[in-house]
Length: 161
Image (tube, rainbow, N blue to C red; front, side):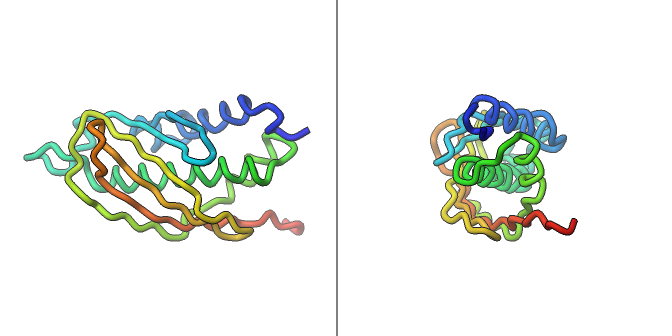
């Protein structure tokens, strides 16, 4: 029986991973809005600690790139879970633990102003060794703040390990 025969368990595990188990994501307040495997979404609120340009109150570029990187990783995990289901949550966890960002490009389109932000991602290609993802970050007014593209290394589980 695949873990995806119980999608709520799979989604709950991903939610716990992003929101609670990764300390940096918890620190930034990332919350999963949608676990749609075609286009997951993550939200976070603007806080004073996230300001990069203090005179204009704009979101720090590092927070923007972190949000895009995180939602891209989430998209890869969701896509893998749906296209390459494993038998158990532990098998998924081992597979997900081997995903790493290979390349990340961020285009900052306009100042990061807003009370909250929504990051979304689409997996363009899920190969056996590399996944390619495109991401977007919008503010609460619907303006696109940044876009991104990423490649993730999907490390195979070695049989001799």
